Each structure stands twice: as C-alpha cells, then as structure tokens.
Image (cartoon, rainbow, N blue to C red; front, side):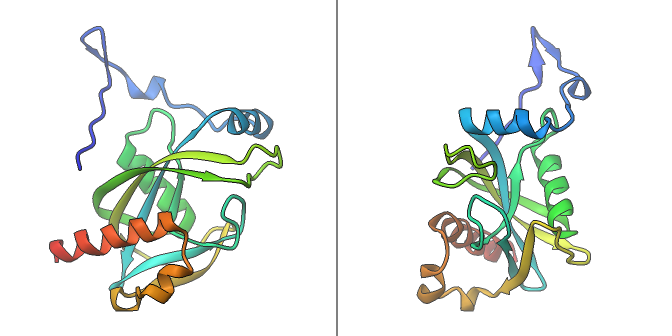
Length: 177
C-alpha cells in the first residue's frame, strides 16, 4: 500500500510550519469529537522480537488491548506525527515504518461524555521500536506478544481492528527479516 502527501497549492510548495497548530482546548476538541470523524494513525511496534500491546486506560476502548497511536498532528508529515505519538505514549523511537492499511473504527464510547461515541479514520502501520519502553499515564500493562502466541484464543480477546493490524504486521515484518 502506498501513501503520498501533497503539500502544494497553485503550483507552489505549502510551508508546513504555517499549518502546524497547538492542540485545541479540551472543550473545543470535545465538540469536534462529537461532530466529526477523527483522523488517527496506529502502529504495531516490534520490540525485542515481539509486538507491543498496551491496555488503554481511557475511552474509547478502555481496558482493551491496543497498539500505540492516536490523532494525527496537524501540518506534520504523517510518519513524523506517528513517531511523535509513539515516543509520547511508549517512549520508543520508530524505524522501518511500513503502511499496512486504512480502516474506520466506530465506538459507542467517547472520552468526553458527550454520548455521540467515537468515529475514527485510521492509517495503520508496522514499525520497529528502539529505546527504553516507558508508557504514558493513559496506557498500562505492556504486553510483548510473539507471533507464535498470536493464536485463535488470543484473537478472540482482541478488538477486530487490532487483530487486523497484527495479522498484517506479522506478515509484513516477517518478509523484511
């Protein structure tokens, strides 16, 4: 799968630094969250021969095993945004980033209590992680899952989106080894 970014308008390169914005105030983001799909990116990080899963401590998908990821940073190149998100959430630096696919996830829950659920459009990736694993305050219980441990019983315990990412990630990263 190929991903391209086009930062051009009227034949001229768009200066990305003018597009970068600070995070919205919480109340403004809650309104946007209730009204719009949120563009996200997620990554299956291969670390010490296993893929990293974490427990989410916030909605949506609270208490579920997930890969690292979240909202795309405005104006920042996609892979750089993904690198920053991974570094913030688990302390790891990403290398050998591979786009695996695009998905839409719909959750009944939301992190703001607005009652409209969560609607995300996500680009999902596989990458290798380097550095020291250290989770942020929104994730816990890091689990390093080896491919041979990724059984049908384990798949039944995971969200179908996470299963999709892991199936593709194990396949793609095995080819690269």
